[in-house]
Length: 110
Image (cartoon, rainbow, N blue to C red; front, top):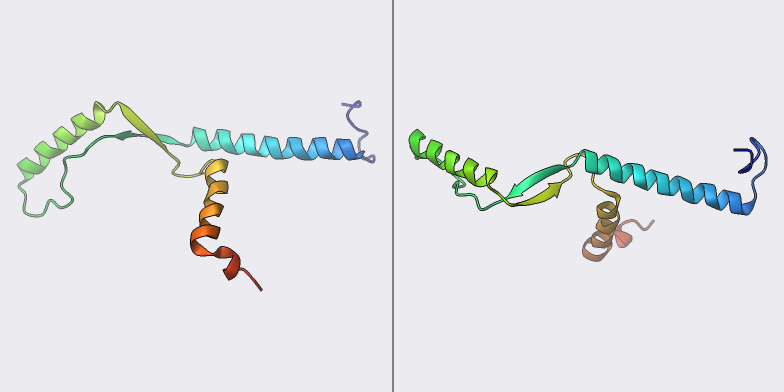
């Protein structure tokens, strides 16, 4: 490590840039790995369950749930959902919508 920099010593401009960029890269890498570890795979399928089961018999509801469960188990497509921590690219692209659709720049002026 002595070849990188002297501990508590002055850094050159190149060393500052390398350490700064490597810190940002490590942060984004850790963030991406953590987001993917905490992500879940949700099956994509056409559900047959109605939005309201009011007035249906318990037998009918049970039959529909069994068919729906079979459809879910046999799904061939999955989508990744991020219930806790979104990946950095989704967070950064969300800012574009804030500026474009909600005019956040106007609302943050002093």
